[in-house]
Amino acid sequence: MTRHATALLLVVLGSVLCAQQVPAPAAVSTADIDREVWTVIVDTVAKDDIVRMGSVYTPEAVIVNPNSTQAIKDALDRWGRDMVTNKAKATKAAVEFRFSKRIDNATTAFETGIFNYGTTDTEGVRTGGYYPFEELLVKTDGHWRIVMERQFAGVTEADWNKLPRWPR
Image 1 (cartoon, rainbow, N blue to C red):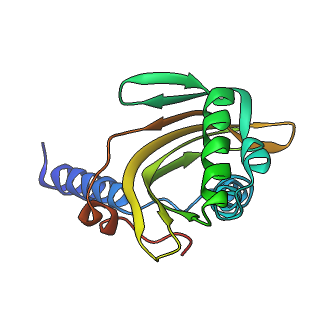
Image 2: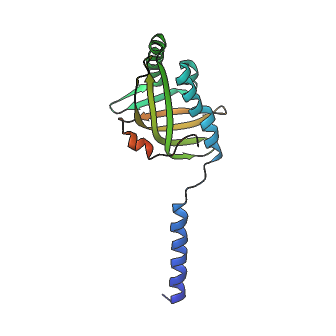
């Protein structure tokens, strides 16, 4: 290989490697997903609004936990009962999200990260934890909806702190 060809190859390879290290800008649909899914979940957890929370899932959605799967209908029934119990005890719930990967286009998306879910009782005592998640979303009838939610075993606050804050 000639000296010029070698130099050209190094420039091209260097350009490719550098381009791969620059994060891609968020797709336009990311803002729509934030507005139609994540912001809604944050709001509905705080307001104990299980009906509105259910609107971010497709009717066929599946929840995957470390050792089981569950239809969204069954999960929403359980979460709704938890909301009623918390409300009766004047316990407040809150959830936050941080993302490690967001891949989306005009009609499909895959997002991963950690959510911080907790409750605070009337004494101000907070219980909760940090849970990694994966979400598969589709845009149907003009709206983003979750098809599959996978929740993993809890992680540490240090793991949570490694991810960028959302919303930015």
